[in-house]
Image (cartoon, rainbow, N blue to C red):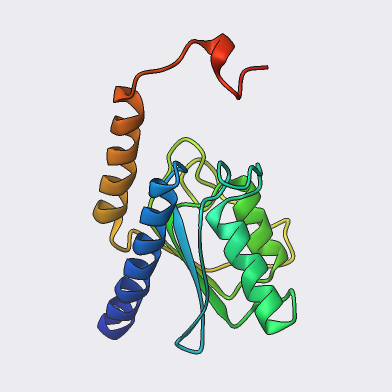
Length: 170
């Protein structure tokens, strides 16, 4: 299939917006993943991971951006919306995209351990589902991977408090 240069430039521009959103997650101590919902060339919603900030296990950038887009558009079906996200969606997020009847998914870095849009497994185009989400991978992947790798390095290098003093210890 020939590459559409104009589409690639548009995808890269929107992915830069998602990368800016990812930096907001990082500043808040969340894994730096950002997402942007676009409809008709206009930004409908921007979000970033907020699992730590909310606290909410479903606080992934993709879930939050789908919720915001659906609320703004007043409908849960989003066939005319493209979501740009800096990391390949997990199973929860990919499933939500299928449920939303999302028009298109564009992601930057793949996630070989948990990616559900083709890396570890694929939910976005599984034949058992009633909708297929067309996906484009690798848009500004190096930039997104650098942001994630930097965040992980910082986490590994920070001093850890003893488990019995941590708020998340149960």
